[in-house]
Amino acid sequence: MTHEAVSSPDAPAAIGPYSPAVRTSHLLFLSGQIPLDPADGSLVEGGITAQTRQVMQNLGALLATAGLSFAHVVKTTVYLRDLSEFAEMNAVYATFVGDPPPARSTVEVARLPRDVRVEIDAIAVVEEVRSAPPVPRQARR
Image 1 (cartoon, rainbow, N blue to C red):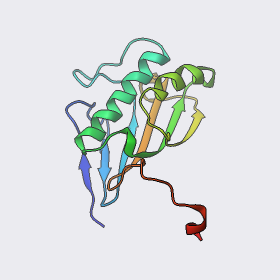
Image 2 (cartoon, helix red, strand yellow):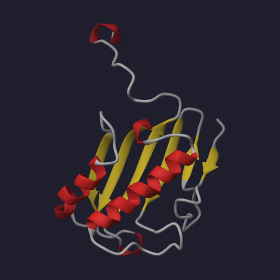
Image 3 (cartoon, rainbow, N blue to C red):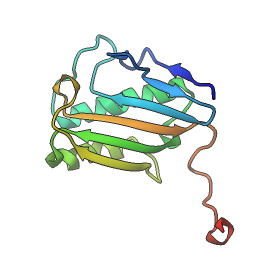
Image 4 (cartoon, rainbow, N blue to C red):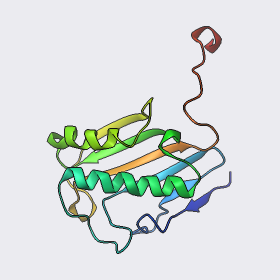
């Protein structure tokens, strides 16, 4: 299996020994993004709303560099420092994802890098867009 690293000048550089995203023949794995401003690497000020917006913009930049969009995303994992902020995060998240939205897990964690409020990673399908018609139940057997 071959794979290649994907990065974007419009998304923060990796802050450790990992790739911002890795593309295989059929999938793009996006590393967890935190609310860093890609211009200077600074932490975005503000609460969960501002931080979630920046995280989603960072993911969107990586997707665009790979020639994809949020319509290609099939799974995300959201890491929240405080689960009581779920509704605010979810309101911003919903403005970025398409219909149907991707599968998602959301977990509360004790701490995130640089003490941010949210981190999100994603998996996208490279070759097809999720807007394809569903397979009828009878054909699935």
